[in-house]
Length: 175
Image (cartoon, rainbow, N blue to C red; front, side, top):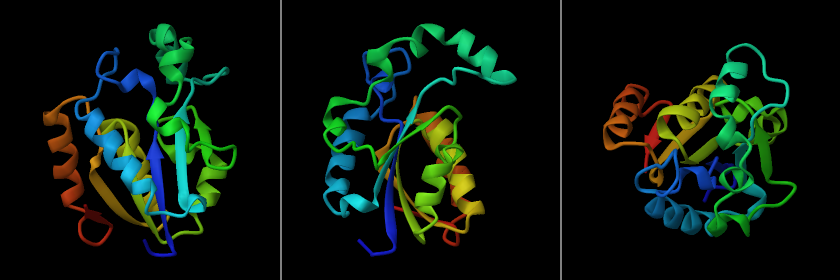
């Protein structure tokens, strides 16, 4: 990988595994892809986000947190998937309570040092898409790693790709 590139892994938590309530299709494939991708980057260029509900939600987040309290309060569902936990450190894991990974100001600052961001994780139609627009606003080139991104359905993933194709190749490339 280029020296000025980073790998961002968004919210690969147990709740998105096939047997759980927010299951995403292609999770096993995404996990394998992400593990291989991590090996191609120096660890100082690999970043993880993890969604944890805010203890003091504002506005619509208060309703969201109430609706999904059963999930938000479940330690197992909120934990990172076992295959990727071994890569997590205090320096590369960033907690967020909004959809965009960039809602964590420390992650935003860490990614600001890089020109190109390789993007993986879940859910394509939610947290991944929200993060993409923030990265574009930062002036970043995004490599959308299709095999490392999971969605809740093929239809939703196709819709995301269709939207992003309009931003290619200037802002987004597909891998």
